[in-house]
Image (spheres, one colour):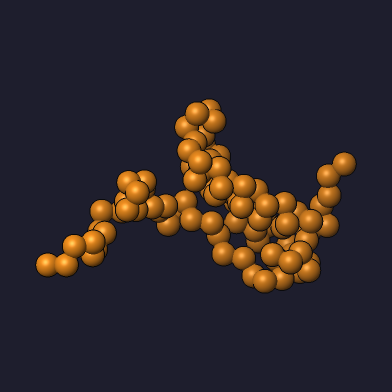
Length: 88
């Protein structure tokens, strides 16, 4: 047997953290959405990641979660901008 080669079937990454489930993965975006060039119907934009919506305290998040949450926030902000909704 060769050392250092293994198949991970447990759902955890080699560093011991859980890999995101399908519901935690970031929704796919088109190139136009990412670049902010598409005019979209805001009702077609998928909601944020449910785990973060239900999160009650920032202590529940780890560093990797913050990266995922930031990208999802940016995705939602881009969708609002593409729909013509701007903040003050």
